[in-house]
Length: 172
Image (cartoon, rainbow, N blue to C red; front, top):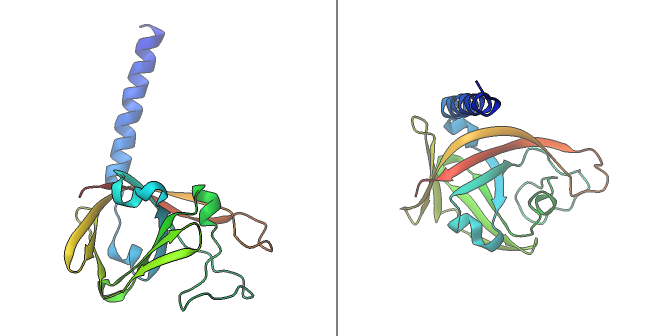
């Protein structure tokens, strides 16, 4: 057996193993309920991309951080992680209400009211549905989860923060 054949066999085995691991991973509604996340929106990628990465807000800002809204302040630096000041924030509220905010240039926020956006997670299929005015807007299937390190946006937090990144493919 040649070296190329051996490499080909190993590569095929690795792909099969990875596919099994990804497909075997499951999520549930509790994973999202009452949590906040963000994802890239450079060039309106949220509305166009086939694959998105959802990053969970897990680290609260230092107590001295000013609150700019009634929502929680988090320490994750979206701009540094995404290399862009354009991103979308999601707040998966109770009763399927969705806080949806489109951030532009790292400061402007176009907020849609909670009564407008809703979410629903289907455990059997790992599908997350977003509804706008009670009509299906988009659907994502989560395929992987990994722990990541991310910088803080606050100077007093010098250590990297730890959080979760989910990879999802757009179904609709």
